[in-house]
Length: 200
Image 1 (cartoon, one colour):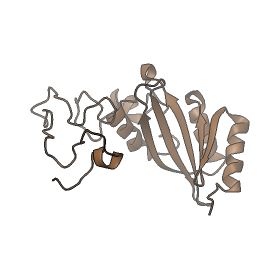
Image 2 (tube, helix red, strand yellow):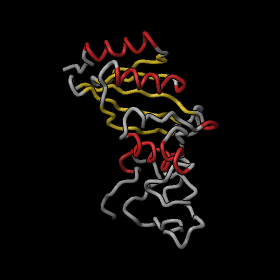
Image 3 (spheres, rainbow, N blue to C red):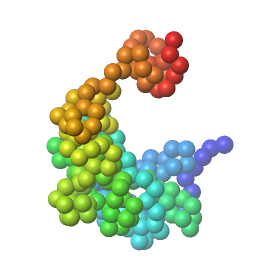
């Protein structure tokens, strides 16, 4: 059985492409992804919500393409409740200008999603309510003052020392012999990838 995006979702994609720049359209396993421009993203998001009915922001995530430029990619999962259909929007973000437009004004749930992207990846959202209220984004998982971004690909699995010993654990984590340690060698991905598994 071949999975295919619905005609209505394809029509929505065409409507976006008719008004905005769509750099790429990808369909995979019945899901439709539009790669758009960061400069137009907020307007595209507003159009998707107000004109096309994507009233639910399911998730915001980011991808680190370490070694490439632009280094980062922002990913937004939208849903149209009435038709029970999803649309994914993506755009790239340069390492030299790691900022993204906030969509909290469109979907209030974006508040914590954007804070998590900042906390884990270091991409900032200048229009976020935190920036307006306190001058910066508050961390949501790591403690205030933590100087690193743990989901960046150049962040070591063991972590890094930090200068906040009174706040939290600040030494490199001892991974030797632990259940999440990668095993170097010629084995396949499952054998080398960090995952919980019984130790020999």
